[in-house]
Length: 378
Image (cartoon, rainbow, N blue to C red; front, side, top):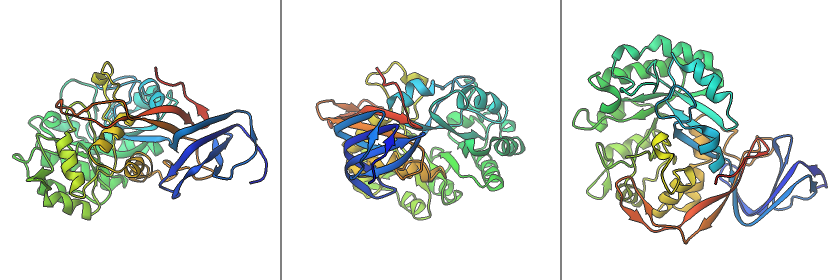
């Protein structure tokens, strides 16, 4: 490469980018908030150079399902403190806002965060602003209001959040809730971010048959109230849904990740498409801190190859969210980067029921958002 002066030059023992098939030692050069040169042969001077010979440099991590919110969400956490500082440069909100509180969410969370925040608009007009289930009142599943809010939101919205669980819907008919969500999806040309109903109320096969290619099913590795494995195998209807183009997301949360379910599914050729935290307020005081690198470590401990783990928090969620310019180290894209280091001494790792596995853990060495270094977490 010809000599040049960059704002920031970062060298690492490994660069990994599933989008550009990059996997080698090298460097990323940044100018004006964008990647200008990447690879093994980067040369030139920089205003600041950082060296991570034992680190893995990835595109900025993407957490497809969490609860970033600074106002009017009972689950919300401050995105820069609890997301960006822990390696995630883009975070998706699972329904924190609906039509009624969307303007506040836009002004108080999206506009004021250094982290890139993308919203799955809640089908419920009240979003997650109350302690009650967001769809307990069927009238809150307002198709016209949801479509109007999405149309006003532009690129800030990537999906419609439709959770038909009993906790979300109460006595509302889950079939009607899903149909209203599908009506919004058709009108806006957006996917659903879908939470399933327990099968004794409505079979998983019937629910999944309603979904379309590109829709994302979250909480995929739960033990209960719904489980995608039986007898050591993934259910046929789950395999069939993936064949039709339905995507499956982890959504770990406080009760939605079981090591045995995850390991069984991965061994049966069914890894998650995307890995997400479902980070919420109840996680804030937990140790170790609930974050995306911890989820990556747990999926690796469950048997998922590490390159697949890297893809599931970079390129795969970028594509699922319709943002192919994210999750990549391609030149002339936003300089969103994460550098991780593996610590094999950390463990054991626990699932949401307390079962544990050894395996080590990924730690964040550096986060860069739009060319700016984010303050590291404590």
